[in-house]
Length: 487
Ligand code: PMP
Image 1 (cartoon, helix red, strand yellow):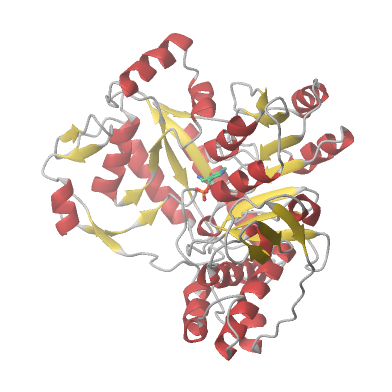
Image 2: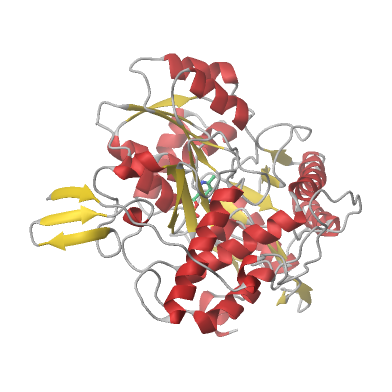
């Protein structure tokens, strides 16, 4: 196929109600730079406090401590989506008024994403609207046109989404972590200096397992001193801190920042996407197609073949506006209080082992831990069935990091691999993870710590639990998945 590109430029206008971004929901948070020091969380989420049935027959308000996996929506998000829905139409494809409005809403969301990432909407960077972080990093791994002998420096702290896309296209050089799950600038500098010279440094800005916040701005500066561009996996950071403006590439997901409508973002220099075939090929990515020729359009449209997810983009835009309205100082102060309460509280419970850095290190309000003698899957099942608390357990899609944090030996890892290959997940190593968000009050962390103390202190359950050997999950004996579905 021959390929070339032509220029393409459109100006969009939106009704004011869609673009002011702040008039839709007052929210319960403060304004940017809020000086409030109370323990009232700076936001609330759709569905907060819904009662769920527990084993003792009581209904308890559901305590979602699984925000690192996915978040419920800020109220402004479905509100903006509802306002937009009557105007829903095809994007970049229709001549009608509604299509123009939908296209405008989509492009406004793109501009908001660029601003959120510290970029000027008319600058050299583009925002590709994709599905999520995984999609964004796979997209970039394809687009960088790496050769099998090329090297990407990455770290053992990464989520699989920032490990596997690189494994497929090139070689990886890893920055190791210490027993506390952190690494330092020196280790990164050493990896960056190695030969062959790396094509990219791909690093997370916040760990989904330990909550650790690597010194991301310093890491980027170090990579730039070595002439290496940086991809920052901002999946966990986006809802908690400002994105690092110096990152060459950024990837994040709407569903982890209170906009669970299926949109994510990849940011990078326009030049990366200006030549060569896009990741996905098809309608919308082209200016001209003949049976033996294609003329790709300009980025970012060139990278967005197929009908775009305009609802997801509108939702993401609303969440961005709401987070900006709440302000990073208020969000970071809240996170900091919760992180210390959560991690410090867990570290003080007998028989509990907190993974990752010490509780006084700056982290997200997130903690992974184990309880001596109680399988992680059973802890999670008991927290849910007896206390109405939702957490995650397992390896959190970061197997290399977790085996390091748990300090497993090579022989233990090999034994677990054999068991999993044989379809037996009963003894898969792992941990329990609790992660809080903009809506979590201090009282919820107290409730969680009390529940963990009870389990770690040997409080018996009122019912027996059985384990599904295929998944490793535990279920209360009287319960079964069919009953759950019917409920
Ligand atoms: N990176 C990190 C650090 C994550 O926590 C996650 C999700 N757990 C991802 C990448 C992948 O995000 P998504 O599932 O939205 O693609």
